[in-house]
Length: 389
Image (cartoon, one colour):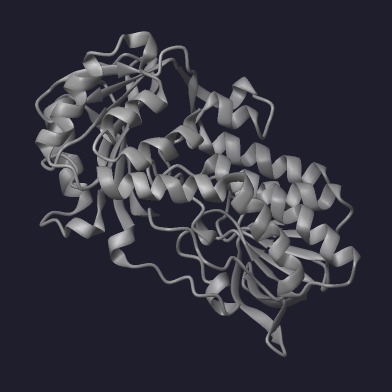
């Protein structure tokens, strides 16, 4: 392991690996550090992405596609079922294989990957980030660099150590739990989304097929509702009703940021990517493609800044501006949509479902779904048009 490099990326998830790949391709010496023993493990994700979004950042490799999705079914609290998004394709990934493939691309581009490398602090000089302290297989090390990219997830410490305000209110977090279930009856090419206060207050439950008789089954509940039960208890109740004969092969739980984007994602010598920078979509909680977009943008800015010998916050703000232009504005609008829809009563959701049933199936695209949900908020309907059309 080198004692000094141009760029250190902390976290080998999709955003971190993609940043490392593009920085290495730009000619930087790059160190990619992952605290776990293996990239992609454990999986803390529902693993769903849209085909359009994924193709915008990478060529599809069927080896890391677990299931192709060709439809979405919304289920309202009263049981009303609405099929939507006809003609749109999605994928349920095998994140273990997908994340490993991205890390391999980073290495093939010239980045050096180390697993079991736990970053324990930043090296600071005159308020600027100048490297990291880490523990690698029991050995303490200090590595200097020009820029650190923090891609270390929702629990990120990199931003906080670097002087950024990464605190998030509990009301802007979703508590999520998920089981990978087998021995279940599903339509393998259709995602199911369930809503209602009894199922997931302020959020929704999902069934993401991973094969003919298996699926990621999970839910998220908003901290703003202060529910009496834990997310895992809500999930157990949901699974027992929807899939009484299911076997849970894995169980995971954790938090997902569903608040406003961070005000600052850069400081002197430091940038944040993915969940660390609150770049998940506040409406859906999805963040794979967003993280990869951010990782590439961060790498571009890092390469230019290092080659020009200026890694100040002023220079690195180019990344923040690029992110806002590419996805940040859409994320903020999604946050506004989420704030309205998460406050719906069960009857509001039932009425929206009945309204959607009056629209021909072939016209139930994303915009028309949100238009029906936001019918009492005409200004938001106009903003939804900007996002979806």
